[in-house]
Image 1 (cartoon, rainbow, N blue to C red):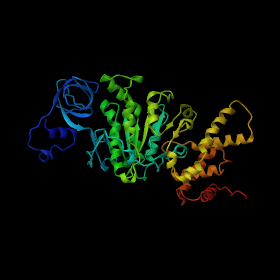
Image 2 (cartoon, rainbow, N blue to C red):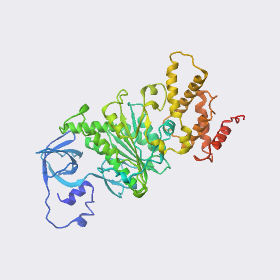
Image 3 (cartoon, rainbow, N blue to C red):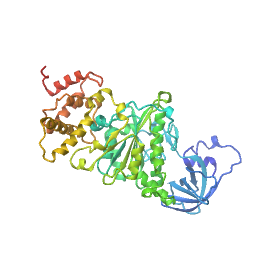
Image 4 (cartoon, rainbow, N blue to C red):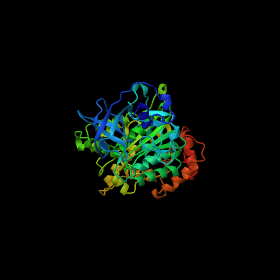
Amino acid sequence: MTLIETEAALGLVDKQTDWLTHYRPALRITEQGTVVSIGDGISWIKGLPSAAIEDILVFADGSRGMVFDLNRDRVGAILLYETEALTAGTTVYLSRHSLSIPVGDAFLGRVIDPLGTPLDGQEPPPQAGRENMEKGSPAIIARDFVHKPLYTGIKIIDTLIPIGKGQRQLIVGDEGLGRTSIAIDTVINQKDKNVLCIYVLIGQKRSAVVSTLETLRNHGALDYTVCVVAEASALPGLQYIAPFAGCALAEYWMAQGRDTLIIYDDLSTHARTYRELSLLLRRPPGREAYPGDIFFVHSRLLERSTCLNAENGGGSMTALPIIETKQGEIAAYIPTNLISITDGQIYLDTDLFVSGFRPAIDITRSVSRIGGKAQDMSIRDQAGQMKLDYLQFLELEAFTRFGQRLEASMEARIKRGRLLREILKQDRLAPHSNLFQLAWLSAFNAGLFNQTDPKDIANILDRIEQHIKTTVLKLESPPEQWLQALREWLNIPPVAP
């Protein structure tokens, strides 16, 4: 196999049109090895003395792999594409290329696998170039402070746990609590906001993949989103490289000065896949049988999400990695690793979910370490001490369960806290605008809801949202104008002097 044939097999050049262009008569020396054994998505190869970690291998039958482990007498590789003809004794060639993926605006609205191959039945999109999947994170001097807000459309997040563009915010919780719903709502809310989205699905069942794609398509979000899919039936090697493929796509747009949002759904499956491959390749196991470098794998992935300064284009990549816990155990190995890597976490609680509080976000264990600095000044001023007041309300409410009589001021605070809890409830697939967030914050802080029955708060919020669509007020409008407009909408007379 010649160099041009190897490049064509990797998709780096087109074999039909570029053969004569790239061909040069010269002496060529290539290494070749032989497959010793194959199974479970990995291959052991004899030969290839100069192979290096993450080198791409091309098998004589058309299969492809990546060097993943080096021993004295054998090379361990993970398979990225496997044909039925691959058996022991197959010849293997060293390509001298690193793993890369085609990129470009044509990939928006498409569903691809981690190698860039279309999965939606359409023709391969034209590529504007290729990006290496493995790349170092941007230098410190190339970064800027997170200073622009990224709105999720979810009331409790945008007001109490704000996220900024370039931030890495972890979504953590047990299965079935709505982690994916938060991510999908965030993607849907980026419509007409000039934010390009990459949704990476790792090890999901086909039914879950189809459901996610249909939801995005029905809400018009697929037009500005590219979905990278490595479903449960895919090779473990594809599941392992899937988040790096999505990150490479986002980096291409970030380098052009554009804002991007990437969802990793989910990194628990990715960690288990990496553990499986490492154990099959006989790497020494560590805590919970994970290899010792699992922290490095996730840190080098998430550190690539950042906000670039103006000299480097000013683009950003916001990451929302999703992680699964078992029975709410947030102190497990993988969750604690990712909490230490990211800039905050959104924790979903089973008890809140069962009690009917949706989204079931536990404010006591959720935090955004840098998002508050990127929050719009008007919303930040209105949110103010709301999180602290809400936490104090939760403590007071727990105290009332002992049947103690409370002072009138305490009862008023509890009533106000319960009202706020009703306001923070929200259905899935119903993101709200930032103007609506400011409207309900202003009304709540001004006491316009004090005489409202919590059962009626949903209808009042719907009225406010309908009126917001016709208002001419903006985020930077004075608070007095907002309060006057809200009083008129809610038919509340002005307070007597």
